[in-house]
Image 1: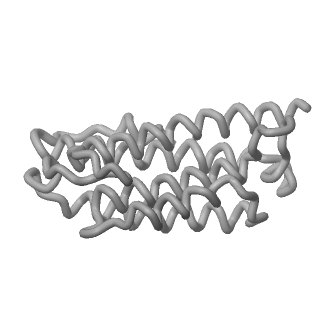
Image 2 (image 1 turned 45 degrees about the vertical axis):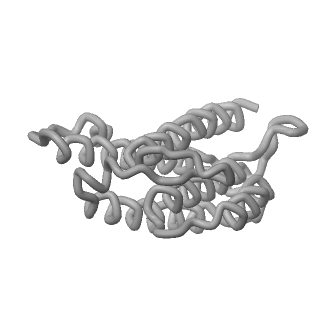
Image 3 (image 1 turned 90 degrees about the horizontal axis):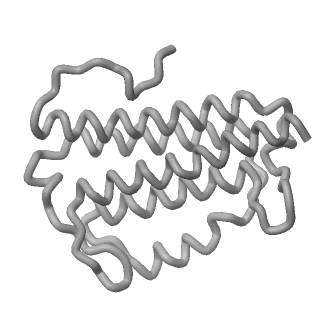
Length: 168
């Protein structure tokens, strides 16, 4: 299968911006799924390569948690910065989910996010949203773009950890 970012389209204007966000989300999901499917065994999910270096599973948890929080800032009517900050403190704590549980959570969360992105108008993409405890004004499209960049950053780490585990 070709990587999602290579999917041809004829979109222009707001449709192109929305299509690029959706392709970015699909690309990140593709990388994560591919990496998790390359794991030789379930135990690899929770392997820590060195003290203080989080596992593959913990990174997936963090991608899901951070993506959920960023989506809340971008899309929810009244995100609660205190509740979101409290949630962030648990991202890296290994919960021991199986590969299939993590993949299912990823697929469900990204599908729901894609539906919400598809429904946005141009004005809604350009709307300024308050982010964080300081309620910094950021355009919705920028928050969504950052969500994808952040997930892509950690996807690269996942890919490296999968390779390191296979060669340990």
